[in-house]
Length: 563
View 1 (cartoon, rainbow, N blue to C red):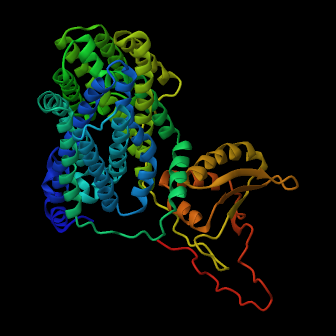
View 2 (cartoon, helix red, strand yellow):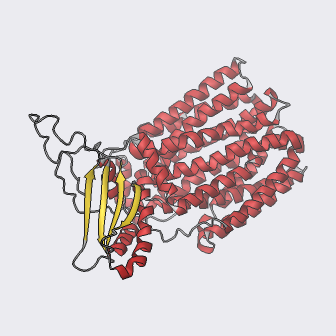
View 3 (cartoon, rainbow, N blue to C red):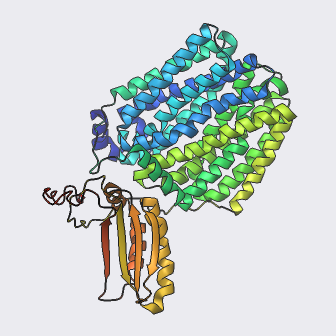
């Protein structure tokens, strides 16, 4: 699954020394990509500092334009992340990563050229921030989803942790470095460094000799893949709750990021270096928070931890709003960074542990989209608030909003994900096929017949309702359960899939927990009657001869592809 060096590491070193936070760095492919990703993270953060500070010069009297820099960098994550996650689940992740990184580097190079030519305007700057962010958004899901292909299974948890630490190490020093670069050489230099720092990571992915393992089923179309991921999240209460909480947290807490340059300039009367130091304090706090995640999950539930850190974020943001001293402001930014990172990481872990492998990249992309969408919209809202009320009051209002968000847990609490089984096991038995089908044949209607003791009707109906969510999140549509009027013992469960291929994929997506619920429903079947499954082609155009003299198609063109 990875290059030969990684294969050797899996064979020899994986079992011998699986422990240790830095053990994944022994595997060559991951080591190269992780180290070069550190450079790209530095470049991204330097770009953020340079663009935000440049905007204070291009639009000195419009705080909302300064706040829009953060929106421009985050909006692509909201808009591109979902299709990027679907593409990462469907195609060669190495090629997708190369495409995204190449686009980001090219966009950064064009922005640098325009800056040196003196052609940068506020909207040109925002436009290229969007383009660069779009390239990164295309790359990100492929990188996250491919970590398991670059390290041994024993090293996977540590490798995921190192991915988070990479960004936060850069966030600890990147903004301060960016501020110094802007002070010494101007924003143009920051743009140039950003563009060039994507290239080492692009080369690292180019050198990765990824072995593509084809799926036994053809990939979904991009639109169906996006819909499948969205429907899974919609019908999965744990993921749906995480997405809502992530959006709300991003929306309410975006002020400290969006208004950072204005805090440094107006409240602290500082320079770009001051802004960089503030963000550096945030990064140090984030690294500290990242190192606490394992201990927090052992001692606190996800809901309790997220609620505590929402309160911590709100109090720290209030301190930023009233502070005029650099040390106090940096201390508050440290607390915000710590609380923000732990909250984001806990929500991220919740998504990963609640998602089956077939939809993990899409679930993570939806999570990224919800979080960054909240930040993007929040950055604009707090920029508008600053225009009307000033920096200090906008920060205080935002602090109150974050504190209020801690109460949402009483309405939609996060669910415990520590014992969730997300391994897909599929259905082993083959489907009998008596006509010519292709993967695009459909719609396919599935009816499942149950014979239930009328005295157990209420109990059966209650348990059968659990199947509705399972069928829908795995790919079924229009689910219903009905009871025969003439024979009250006869029940029919009915749903449909858009195509035969979608039905086969649905059968491959069941987890053991979901099959256990099916077994619980099946237990109500009366002895000797069993259950019967009918699979029918709705509107069967093409399954009958056009004319009497036309030849019959061969039976079973596709059929069921066994495990």
